Image 1 (cartoon, one colour):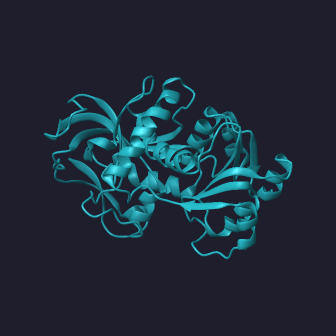
Image 2 (cartoon, helix red, strand yellow; image 1 turned 120 degrees about the vertical axis):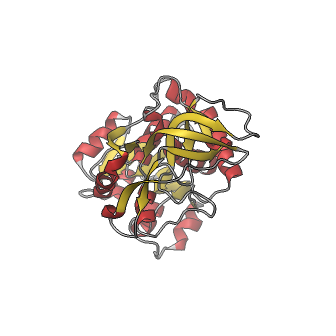
Length: 325
């Protein structure tokens, strides 16, 4: 099969498409012929040598895909050859075929093309596990997502609105904020020209929001805490601005705040399967109803992985970027 290979650690130019051996499936795995794979920032970190795949995982890039089941291991019960599916991967999506545990596979939702379905697994599992399973966002609460125009952000806006939350976003341009508003965001804040803490306080009668999903990290930590309501929950999923920060702990105590952080890639297959089950129960119906839609910015061929990486690193996109074998 063809796959995108990291020839050495470095910039996008180190990516090359090469002929490699087909993946071998284990007894509890399915082999998917890939229709599309979606880019994630983690792919760019792996390319630079900063985000290695878990032991035993594919060394190729790609944390999610969609496609058609081509073969099944002897212990696989749910899937049949020919099923159209999408999957959460530990690696291997930038290829024509990938092996994945059956619990990390979901059917392509009704009304969604098999190609667009590649944009859903990583964002759906990330947002559902952090915002809902762990931070318990509920109807009538307020929710702030930083990077509202990202793949995570565009999905989080829609699923939070679907479940009855009032949604705040930050983004860095009027075009991105307009896209967030079109997806249902209630309060759109340009972080380059506005103080998001002041705006959040103004829009919430000085109370603050109930839940924040943050990918920025260090430079936002104190400000995030400052704009949380009593019993507020901050969930950190990235460190774009760095990993070390100083915090005034008094606010945490006074407002009974919760700070959590988690990633997805290094979780156990059992943990990922539990998240996928919840996503199928709670997210897939919203997608089937057309209330949560894939937001795909651009598709590239597998041979254009260099250009695709340049685009995601430019942050000019809105939503997800796909690679098509």
